[in-house]
Image (cartoon, rainbow, N blue to C red; front, side, top):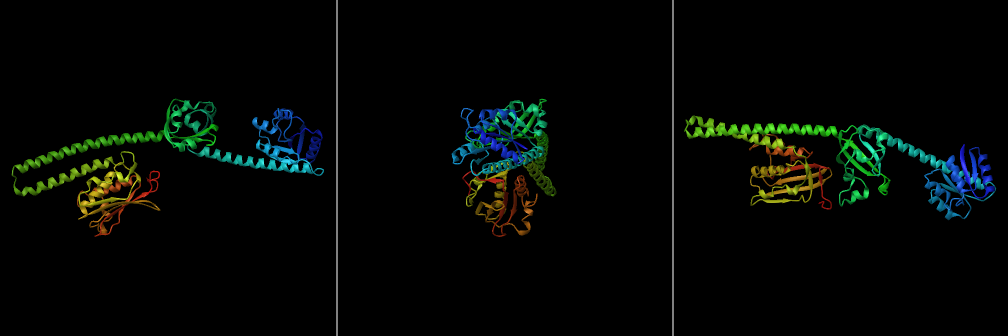
Length: 472
């Protein structure tokens, strides 16, 4: 049985309405002729449905439905009004009414229409309620499983907090939902403020993740990755959602690894220094022996000693370069700015079509193109043309380094990237592949022997970009 409150200034109509609806066995109906009394009755014992004419005296000329909605009352409200009152109906619907039924017609017909309208409104409300419950269940499941803390801010107060956020901070939900956000996040005002001139952030209310610090209840500092956005970008005053990932352990491990690498780097540096000093002693003694006019039969031995020490020196120098590989965070670099133009000798034409394209790579990217340049001039024969081409394809970006030299034999196309292979140190192209591989860029040689070498670098999507408005 649904409880209905009927409101109308016609007592006779209310009596008929009460009798007709209660005869269905689905409703119990209370009535009043005053809007003010209706408000008090609804406050004392809320009804399931309110049926009312529009407007009514009793609350300073304010329509009853508007007064209820301003009080936060969402009870289904149906306008029961006379024929030819379309403007009144539209006004009532705009103030939050759920439906309407027309008075008048054959005996009992108006109450049949009213009962049908009640069923429609109730059915719609139930469907909406089911959808809301399902959405809330989905949201609750997401909040239970996502490895992040979530909070809703109203102003600078935490209005809602997820269980994960409680676990991260050491507070109970009741404590969090009474807390000023500054307690957890002292620099909130700085982080939430959009960057100057960032209209995208200003308009959407969203942010890119930023690393910051939170304070646990026990005083421990958390290092977190945080993003935020408006509950409703059209109405920022409705609140802000913040999403917090705890990266404390990750950052501690990263710091420990960085410290270990720093110590290994120091040890390697000291070791290299000592080895190079020993090589200097060997060189000095070779010169000293040669000045003594030694027997000719030991010349070959001195030559081997000298050649071997030069190889050791080259390998030690390579170890220094290789140690630096990956030691600094990768960053966005413009291809055109790292090409070795200043090294191109007279008589060699150099051109590029890469324009403004940038790739995300190790800071040693410049050494990639230096080694490709050195390889072309050192091993390409009479090279007269060098060309760097960038073109976007379905799988990503292709960067081609081309020369018009003698090319690379088929059987050597893969071996040239092996450490130690080649006519010089055998380390240049090996280093090229290692540098590019840090950010997932691959390189192969696809040129035609006798017509020139082509080193083809494949850059995955997400590892290259064009500045806004400068593609192509």
